[in-house]
Image (tube, rainbow, N blue to C red; front, side, top):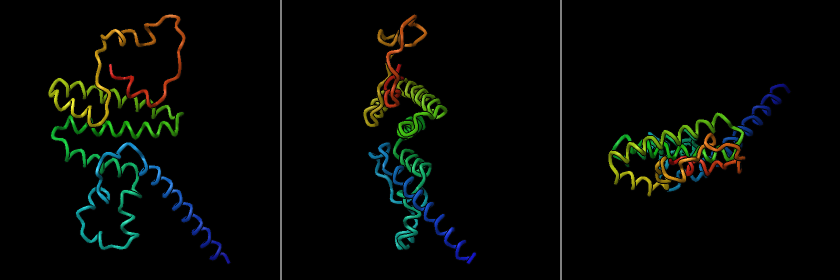
Length: 190
């Protein structure tokens, strides 16, 4: 009796874990932050194995990107970008852009994640710094990356509409509205 109860508990736990894995993989794989990339079928490092194509369906699902974690998908996107772009600066900008888009989706789902929001703003600022370096080094590749990945172009901090943008320059002016997560990427370009 105890053994059958134990077996049913284990089966129930397996069922819950399986449902949670499917839920996580569907939300991760259905994301929009990497849709314009032609990703391989399997996780990074397993695409060159010919035996995997003839393996059972369960084994193929284990190694497929459909059931991979977010970090495995990010690694696959990173290796794709490293093959596509020549310089380290371009690779880091594009990888950072995909990471920012992924974090945008996460912060939409969980708006109270303050540490994630701080990291998100830091990542945008790092990408902005790298974009400035790329613009100084090679303006054509800068324009291509901006156009291809739909990144807002950099603006001068001395432009009239950016000059007094910070709250510290506005005395006795109430806040207009709370910003949405989607607006951070467009707002922080000065």
